[in-house]
Structure formats: C-alpha cells, structure tokens
Length: 92
Image (cartoon, rainbow, N blue to C red; front, side):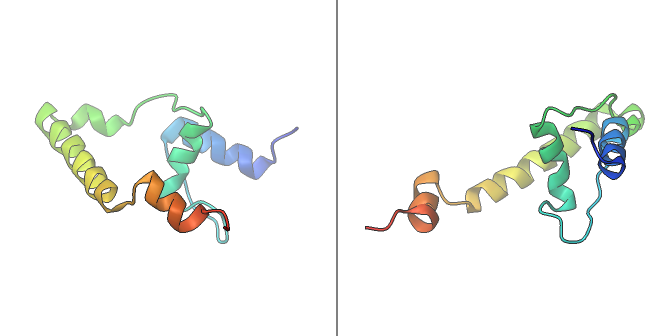
C-alpha cells in the first residue's frame, strides 16, 4: 500500500528530526506521537544536536528529571489488575 504524501512527510520529519505534530481530531496527541512512531520501529536517523552542547552534568540532570516525571506518573496509575477490573471486566 502506498503511503499518502502527507503521512510520508510526517514519517520523514520524525526520522530526520524526531519532531512530531498534532492535527485536529487525530487519535494520538503530539506528545504521544514519538512513542507511536518508535513502537512501530520507526527510528531516528540521528540524535538531537543539542546533545553536543550540553555538558555531561546537564545531560544527567535532564535524564534524571525525565525519570522523576515518569516515576511520578507511574505511581498515579492503577495496577493492571485494578484497571482491568474497573474498565474491562466481563459482565457476570
């Protein structure tokens, strides 16, 4: 199946820059788009150039903050079992 030009552009943009954008009424939000692309094994062709100007300490702080934010979010989420019981449980 041929990829429509608008989709091909978005795939190329992500591969070349890691950038993604949201179009109204799309299923995935802009901040979810990279995860969707990576989940489909669409990978970046290069890393972000900002890394070249950041010190090791700045990079360490940046990644530590990402981990802290992810851990905070994870703590708020229900367990798999709780989620299934609450949202996916079969009728009795």
